[in-house]
Length: 341
Image 1 (cartoon, rainbow, N blue to C red):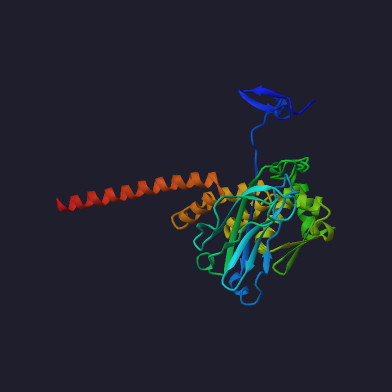
Image 2 (image 1 turned 45 degrees about the vertical axis):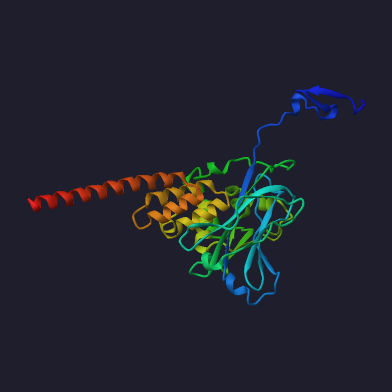
């Protein structure tokens, strides 16, 4: 058919090949998100020893449903400052992103605003200055975050697991649970090594993959280094905390000492590796321990991570505290009146 023929559509003249059929009506936009948390130690000292335009890169991060689209953060060094940028390392897309950090008090500090970027044109975003004086913690570390949103147009969706991870909170029988714990403690036919803080944790790929969507994707894609050599290097968690998560994979439980020592850190790595039941355990534990000395810290943490249980308990604690203050003030006021009389 001659493409120059035109039809009238809604009072406008349109080329016939541009007219949409009913099947061409756009559906509701459903975007997906992904996030990375990156901790860098002694970043301020490297500038004295490395050449300009040298950069450190984070681990790749992606949405587990669409692993073919991945990104990484890069920190560049120059003579006067440290600069951070976002780079796409796999399939290129248009995205919206935001970069931020946590200051020494746990408050969020935006490094960038929510910004659109087309990685089809530029492989990196613009570079943003890292305010080291404001963002460096007492141990010399800097905690950086990136959240991005994209439309998974023409992206292949990853294979769904046969079993939902949120169903894995306990194993069917005590005997089977004990068997798995023995497998871990005795290192029976382990086929994967986790390297962290100059220590090693011997474990099983199948256990990691069954409990974590992230580990499943890691081992599923044979081209990834971890899948090839069975070595996983962890740089953003302490040995004790990561070991507690691994033990949870085998036992379905977290000991109280671990929760008391590092519930926030454990929640963070559970969020990173998409271990939903462990996230809930940590959130409920943190909510149960809210008191005057940690109220502000818990509130900020809940705001950053969007934790409804902790927010609800915080609000209840706040209301009760106000009531107690009012009661104490009223008692003192009445006592003063009684003395004056």
